[in-house]
Image (cartoon, rainbow, N blue to C red; front, side, top):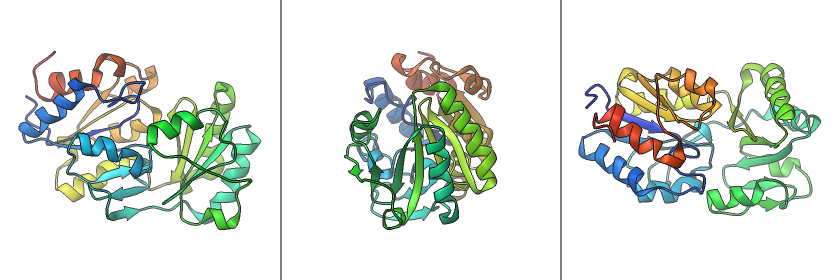
Length: 272
């Protein structure tokens, strides 16, 4: 057993669940094994908190839920908001214009709503299945729709356009926001304080656990910030070489129980 680890923080999509968005029996058992060993377990995701509810309930999570990459942190039962970081109002219009200029579909998440302009656009149906609720369809984004914005997402399967949009968002919006891909086709843009590295910092304070005693596991670009803030970082086998190189350890893919294998091999010390 890795006796230095007191908390494991995991990404969800591409990490904790399969491509079909399912928890495997091995992953459920691995979280139970952590609990039996006295190691806390927490989840963070680009999903809205209510899109994390079923997983939290199944895994009996008793730590804060970090949705929207840390944009909203709630109690384990999602009943109370512990902290939130709104999207900077002055940057909303610029962000929408930037994503449109690069040909990306645009989704806007507020605390309560998911707004899209075309229900048949790529990945909308898949995302609705993932988070467990349907978007609100609007003709265009108006001022009335843009109150309490937490996250803006650019969506595209065109890799060059996505890469250009990522670079443009990071250079144009600068330190005001956090802009990174949560999936190859999703560019998540949030308040600069809403990132997974900040989630590690929050949990370290909230649970009184040193950063060196926190392990993180993920698969995407936006997971690298939490890797950098934790004592032990684990990349999934399905992660890109860049993400894998940012982690101390690499496990199997999410289609081959990589999460469960990482828990047993790197945290509990019983390789499977």
